[in-house]
Amino acid sequence: MQRTEIPLQPLVQSQKGQPFSRSFDQRDNEGWISDDGRWSYEGVVEHTRFRCGIYEVGIQLGRGVSACAQPEWFNEPQYGTRERQCNSAAIIHSGGGTLPVTREQVETANCVRVLVRCSGTCG
Image 1 (cartoon, rainbow, N blue to C red):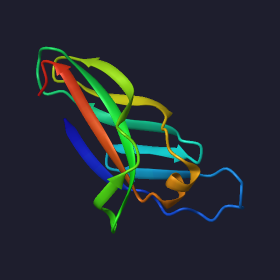
Image 2 (image 1 turned 90 degrees about the vertical axis):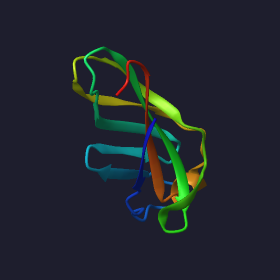
Image 3 (image 1 turned 90 degrees about the horizontal axis):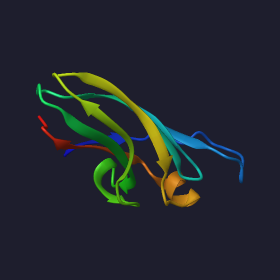
């Protein structure tokens, strides 16, 4: 399992009660999460073997002392992409879902953990 912790972009002040979203962007990982828990992810996942593996990408939302330092995670990992990869291929994963988090948790979060898991021949 590969884990990458990415600081969330600061919340741009929104009107009270109005919808908002938070974004993250680091190297080959980018996405957003809205105030109602909907999320989207797009990023490159590399497979380093010739034989095939099934890769999935998921996220967790949390709050740390200073962005991603010792974060408390608000949810269990939720996976939103599933791709079969072979022959040392790098593939762009794109997907999303809805996290079981509150509007307040999205508002106070400052970190996202991107998780990549693999089954089959993984490298």
